[in-house]
Amino acid sequence: MHCRLLRDIFGNPFRPVTFSPSWRTDTALSLAQGMYDSRDFGAMPILADALQDAGCDNHDILSHCRDPKGVHVRGCWVVDLVLVKS
Image (cartoon, rainbow, N blue to C red):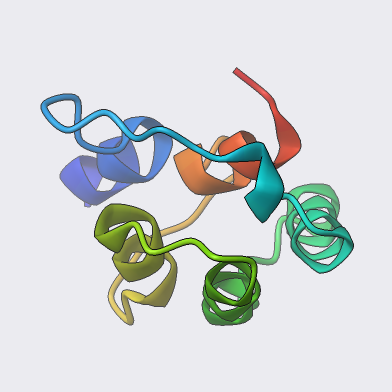
């Protein structure tokens, strides 16, 4: 459990991700802010779809959002990238 939590917050330190500002669409921002505020991360797969629709093809980002066994908390590295919190 602790390993999953650490992966949710920090991602993979050996594969840093470059996040394109063009992926920060109104939909992605709205979804990310809603999850951040409510601490309910059930919309992570929908965030993956929104990011993909915006042109994101980064496997690490998309698979993190769609991982059915994923643990997500406030501080999730993908949500923080979308909201520019780091």
